[in-house]
Amino acid sequence: MTPDLWMLLAFAGLLIAGVPVAFSLGLSGAVGILAGLSPAMLATLGTNTYNGVAKYPLIAIPLFILTGLIFERAGVAARLVRFAQALIGPRHGGLAVVAVLVCMIMGGMSGSGPADAAAVAMVMLPSMTKAGYPKPFSATLIAASASTAILIPPSVALILYSIVVPGVDLRALFAAGLFPGILAGLALLGPAVLVSRRYRWEGNGWEGSGGEGGSQERAAARPQVGESFRQALPALFAPVLILGGLRSGLFTPTEAAVVAVTYGALVGLFLTREMRWRDLWELLGEAAVISGVVMLIIALAGIFAWAGTMLGTFRHLAEWIVGLTDNGTLLLVLIMLAVLLAGMVLDAISIYLIMMPILIPVMQHFDWNPVWFGILLAMNIAIGQFTPPVAVNLMVTTEVAKIRLEQTVGWALLFVAAMAAALALVALFPAIALWLPGVLGYNV
Figure 1: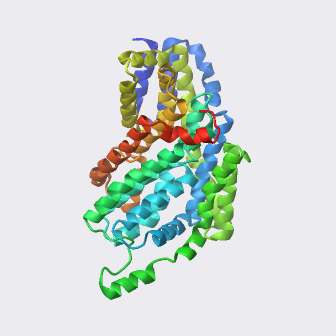
Figure 2 (figure 1 turned 135 degrees about the vertical axis):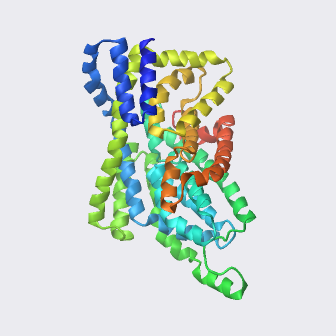
Figure 3 (figure 1 turned 90 degrees about the vertical axis):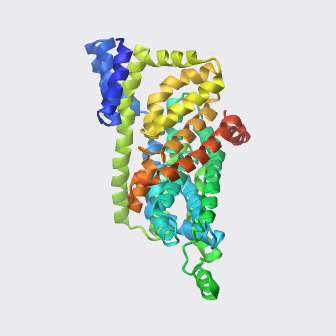
């Protein structure tokens, strides 16, 4: 067997054996070096590990992770829910609409699907259950809606894509992800509302279901729009601050992450006052643990990437993919299906690190716009975040709901179809993603 085949087989075998992705990447890269280069080249392991994480834009990832944790602890999700309830009012499917909208807004703060899912699920699931929504439906809807976090800026996945793909402007990626993220959320709203009305699930979890007494009780319980807006204003201002600062050139994406952390801490400590200084210390530790896992994957992927480049593995795979067909549209569909399958078992960071060295030559061969292609990949990975068997968002929400993952499969397929329709629209009409960065003057 050729050395690059040894490396790929080692990687697949380690994954099947249950070895964590980070160590599978590092060990299979070492196998490739031993098989195709020389044992002396193992001396490069330390250098390649360091080079994998020695990139300034990566600083934004732990900071945005910390931002999501701070806003979760600051009670932001609960305030957004009350404001959305005040706007939507008591109607069938109302809570489903609230869940989707709050997930999208929270995604504009955290940039992480699992963090978004955890924050919203803890607030929304009790209300939705009380209103008659089945727990499997609620958990799946929140998991699917939270997946828009890797599209709506700031997105941790798009930050990594901008690092892996040379020459891509992160600001252009952030702008390009906004409308597809909104489109994905709207695509989920349709079936969610239709199903809610079909089964006549009550809208906002308020007591009383009919008659004068029920109407009065719901009216009394419905949050006041003005007061709920005032309480939600700090949360609503966060995406404006981040995106506005980026657009005005006031700060870079990495500096935006610092601003987001500072703003979130001020909101939690002094405005909502639901966070104490001790909590901030605990959140720093929690963010460090999560970031450590992410950075370990990125660091050890540096070994895999260097070995694959030196052995020509990525070039050979890219040539094989291009040789499958001259039809770029058909090949794009095949790639999207492959990414979807990968998204069902791997996280977004691992997918980018493993697949992009192979897909970059394919993208260049067919002259696909790298910003548009990055958004398509992100949408596809978002679908994978709530598609069993390994659905990171769904794992979070089912844990909060105290149900088994297999209970959500039927609902998950419904929302997969809805978001796949949104993905198809962005693939057919690239302007959905590219119009805004073009208007803002970014390089696309």
